[in-house]
Every structure is written in C-alpha cells, then in structure tokens.
Image (tube, rainbow, N blue to C red; front, side, top):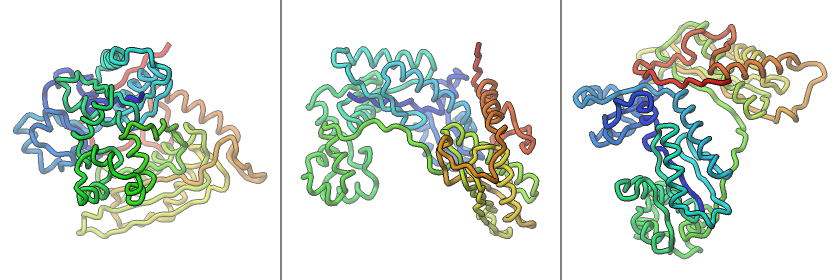
Length: 413
C-alpha cells in the first residue's frame, strides 16, 4: 500500500504555527520581491483571491477583507517541511519526498496492521509535533494514493482528513468522481485530446484499450493507466544528484553599481557551493548571467552571460567565488540598471571520483575549512558564518516588506 501525505495550505499553516491568532482568518503568502500570491488559506480562497494574483492589483481587496499578507519565508518553510518529513520516516523507512509539502510512503510488511488506526496515529503525531495539518490518502498504487488524498482533502468533514481506498468498488467510485484534467500525470494537452474522445473522468481513461493509450500517450500513459487500475507500475523514487545547480534572484530594486552586483553574485556562488558539498559533488565550470528589467522599456536594455572553465573539479566556495567574479567582470557593463543575476554550476562529478590535476587544483586546506563552515552554519543557523565578499545584512536582499516574525529556534546539546 502507498500513502500520499500532503500538508494543508502549507505556507499559510507555517505562519499560523507561530501566530495562532491567524487561525480561521484569510492568509496569503507572496512570491519573491512580494510580486504575486503563491499560497492561500481556505479563507482567502473563499474570497476569490486567485493563485498568482498580482499584489498591486489586490491591495484594495486585502484591506477590504482584512487579509493577512506575508512575504515568503523559505527558511521557515524548509525547516518545518524537514520536521514533518522526519516524523513521517519514523512510521515507515520507505519515504519519497515529492515536494516541500508532500511525501509518498510505502508500507511493506504492514499486512496485519490496522491501517485506519495507523494513519490516524500518523496524522495525530505530525499535527501534535509540528502544528501543521495534513491529509492522508492510502491506496494500492502511487497514482491511486493521489486520488485518495484528493478525496481526503476535498471532503474533510466526512473523511477527517484520511481516506483509504479499501476495495475495487471504492476505486471505481473515486475514479468516476475525478475529472480527467485532475488526474496526476495527465497534462493539459492530453486532457484536451481525451475530452475530444468523450473521456471526461479517470475511470473512463482506465477502461481504454491499452494499445490506444500506448499509441497516443506512450509508455508513460500506459503505466499511469495500470496504476489507476490498481496494478503497481511505479515505485518510490530515490533522489538523484542534480546535474547542475542554480541560484538566481531578482533584486529588490535596480542597481548599476558593480560592487553591489559582485556581492550578490558572490552570495549566489556560495549557495551553489553549499549545495554541491551537500550532495557530494564538485563542478568544473560556472555560468554567470546578468539582466536588466525588461519591463522598463524607458531604460536601456542589456543582458549577457558567460561560462567560466574552472580547470579542476572543486566545491570550494573560495575558489568558485574567484571564478564567478572573473566571469562577472567580463560581462558587466556600466550605464545599465540591473534587476537580476544568477549563477549555475555545471559539469558536476562525484567528489570522491574527481580527476585531480598535477599542476593545479584547489588548496587542500579548503576541504576541511568548508566542512567546518558547513558544520557551524548547520549548528547556529544558515548564514551564521559568512565570507568577506558577502554583505553582513540580508543574505538575498529581496523586497520582503511583510515578513512575519516566525523563525525556527533549534536547541542542540
């Protein structure tokens, strides 16, 4: 059996953990630089505030309905997500973290368990320990667990946030209820094609001839169909190391000062280096880009990028900052107002399999130094130890005028 555990209105729920007065009140979370709405509580949805609503267009509605508006606090959300996932891993060793607020759980050898009681225990433990409400859908396959979770969330008054697809009649009833465009794995184009053949719900799709599905939707569609029929075709996925790592940000406003942009690029590079070390990789090249604001047509426009060959595999923040700044110096032009920059490290190789150079390479002392910096930042909080090229102020320098006071405090003995 598979379960899909989904945190309800996750970003808004995180804010409510640290401010209980927000419960039962409309809450929206804004994107980077407070540009648009990226998360809403149920109360905000009921007011008709759509996902992606531009902040400036909805300011009047926010004030009229006393909507609580917050800048996104990704450090808080990431830490709360980690706590939820760690708790879930105590109930089964087979966990696939699907997104920041979703995880698939597989229950192997649980045939004699009362899964209804077990799911209730999972839900109670997560909510009691973190304050984050969750819904659980349990079914024979991953795709069906997605359907079960949707039912658990849609009809919480009846399900209590838990729905178990216990038999084939429950599977058929659920698939007849689910619209074809809402099926996990069926995109917009496939949904439109299926509707042209009068396939409007998931059950109709599951009953199609396998040859037709394979011809029109490839083997991926055929696997999905088998999953909806209750035949296991998808296993839990183990996270694979990334082939490239990017850190890109829009600035809080436009800047034409090289030193400011240099500090931003340095900070982005350090973030990429931390991610490299976390997954045990080194990079051999670094891509740096700059952009002006394309929406300001009254200002001169410019964008450029460069790939810098590092010369040896490394994950040293010190070395990567040096190469990133060299690239920035090549593409930076005076007289332009820059709005966005980014760094992408590429050509990744495993740290324990890198080809060393006889004549050049990173300083051997860097490895121990990076490990110690990572350890201290993990213990005292991200950004506790910074490099001289970084600003001691806000690490990302985004416009976050409505940031809540919610923060994670970790006590370690």
